[in-house]
Length: 422
Image (cartoon, rainbow, N blue to C red; front, side, top):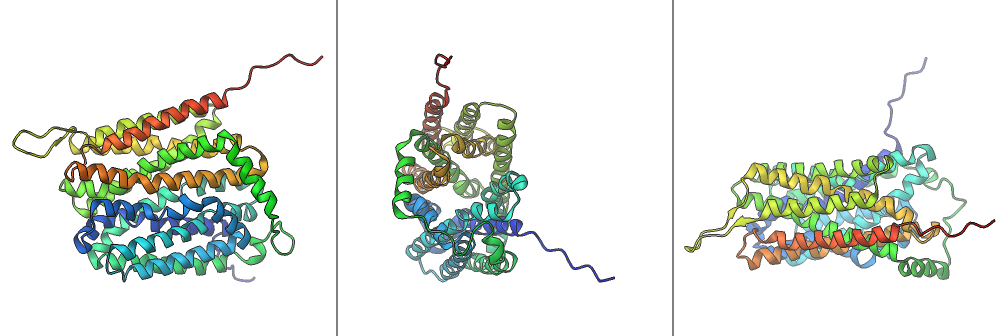
């Protein structure tokens, strides 16, 4: 009787882990901001752009990079993206100042996009149809999971060896992940369902799909909704370690509290799918999410005015309740992305434009994440470095989200039934 061979993780799981690995580079910066401020003299506004620069590629060329990923084949695109992330992060560990870090963050953004835009297409080729929804559900939590891991591990690595070691560690993880993906997902499996070389769509049909998508109102409403959601979520979660550190919390404890806030976002992601399955109207979930984000941000940041002598404003709530407010902000706000992805299936202007619609949503998300953190940082800088007025910026985004939810409600309302044909 032959000895049993050790079981290997299925290729789909390795693909999901590769997405988590790529997203670690988005999440590695929030716990590093206080350290970078001390080591490199990074200002609040520069920190905001460091947070958002990784989204530059997605904001400017999400659809174009998606088309590039299709041309490369999904497996090759993910491998190139992981190698690019490893190289940029390794070089970032040698950066002498913020300018080089900003440029390398943009390069990391391109690598991140090559990985995460190709992953769903690769999963579709690797997973049987009856299991695809389950696997895609697991995939949808890659970003909050990576953010949580980065917030937990980053402070410990930086306390032990400095911020440069944190950059180099993630470079090594990305290189190892590229090697694992190459071994675990063979070329034959990645090309399942294709014949010969991957087919290249003629240029005119690609342009036609793009025009058809951008001419329809649904994809625009989805992209704008994703923008106002992602901008405020990234701003709050990105600066939360700094807010806690300024309040006297240790760097490690601030990382744990922020990791908890990022982790509960997964509950909202998963909960949205279950509630939609039970028949809850998607617009109700969007309204609940944006209201929770608006209220949670106010309770987190708002403060009583300082006295005439110039004392700093006193937070409206004690720290335990402010932590609870952040959990409300992130957890219930997590209903929004899960709902928007479900609506993409309904609002894409045709079956052949679903990927283009999702790519346009990715550009909206990148736009929000690029401009949200610098806007909140600018408000904080105008307030003398305090965060007590930051809720004005996030609250405006929440109100915009509610307005967009109203427009989506009108767009989703079924047309009145006409007379039936005899």
